Image: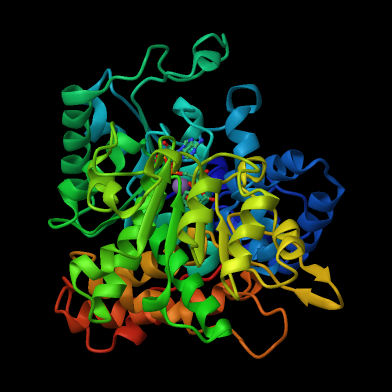
Length: 542
Ligand SMILES: NC(=O)c1ccc[n+]([C@@H]2O[C@H](COP(=O)([O-])OP(=O)(O)OC[C@H]3O[C@@H](n4cnc5c(N)ncnc54)[C@H](O)[C@@H]3O)[C@@H](O)[C@H]2O)c1
Ligand SMILES: O=C(O)C[C@H](O)C(=O)O
Ligand SMILES: [Mn+2]
């Protein structure tokens, strides 16, 4: 069946709106369905941008962009290409957080997502088929929304993060938007405000956990692989008790990736390399303190650990570089309620004369003199002036990454960190931060957000038809990004700017594809991985 008339205008993947030529209008049965002027995509984009600029506040700007996306995908990305740095915080973090909180109140459109209900496992396959609607799906971003950013459980509302992550994939790396599918797994919610909200659109019961949940995930993975055998499966914002378990279950058999564990580990290590390029220090000389040893925190620790081992350290030597602080304080071998991931990186009480007192961040910083402090705790303002000053007393260039998102949850602001350390701190923040001018130097602040790395990595995996994602590929991608910092400029950032996102995502994709092919992990024959990336790249033109 060929798509004609209003069906084509209402299909966001096919619609060109007023850019349909007179001949196309005749061909597709569109004559008279549009005003007579035929516009170019540039004219449409200019017009749309003016409308965008007239909107405020930011949530209204986001709603405008989402409506545009729902009508005309090509025009949306054409415009986004021209304004990546401006649109990123709106379609993605931090404004995506506001839209998730208000999902039910502002809902107008399902945004081409697949909604899977835990109450109906028998519908999984049909749902994926219905929502793919005949498209050849190469990338799925799935969330069950139990740990949306640092905001906790947001039930079906969390679908917006899957949509937002995919928008960044296309804008940054150029994956064809017709080949992607956002998926919401609605396992219920323990968020009382949502359950009490008469407008709530998801399952109105508590989260189903344990065996029933894991069986549902299994069914989902099986159906996803059966229907889209060449796809990459990206997991986003699962809860702490499920994220690592799910990744471990599937990572050695399918092309899959957990963004909060692996993506965050990658961007943080790349940022640390950027910082060490500036301070001219070595990774093996650092002491790492992770505040908030959950999904992201442990992903970061494991990534650095694996790099230290690559540098020649034994397991034991490498482990001795880490200190984890969570709700219980410094994590010891005998601390209660340790997660599986934490158990390998605990300390022994015998190392300290005052181990009982190490139950808070200040005490631990004073005691162990970290050179790198990472915040993935969801606890705002916890990198206090005293803590930061104590750290700066014992290390020349303290590396401090307050990464908790969204904005209101950050452990510290870049501005305070610069001030409190007299310009010495090397910083990355989870959300975009403005330059900080202090004593005549303008400090650029790197964005330590996994969005700087997952698009290139994921696109490289898709373009090279990867069967698996290995540590070797992950490491290659990190080094590609870590090497892009201009260290000679005073106040240089530890990561490249988001305004260069499309350029460095391209580089990361190429390195990823080369690594996949080098390991023989490509499904299809590929002679030239760089060319394969080039060939797979979609551009936002009619
Ligand atoms: N910038 C990025 O790219 C990026 C990536 C992933 C996650 N994050 C952010 O990191 C934060 C954590 O995300 P996650 O997925 O790891 O969540 P998570 O729930 O798995 O982990 C959070 C950890 O913080 C601990 N915690 C809570 N209160 C604490 C306290 N008072 N003191 C010390 N530890 C405490 C929890 O016990 C848990 O172990 C979120 O805000 C998220 O937005 C940022
Ligand atoms: O979504 C983000 O901005 C980064 C990260 O995946 C997070 O969960 O905070
Ligand atoms: Mn996330």
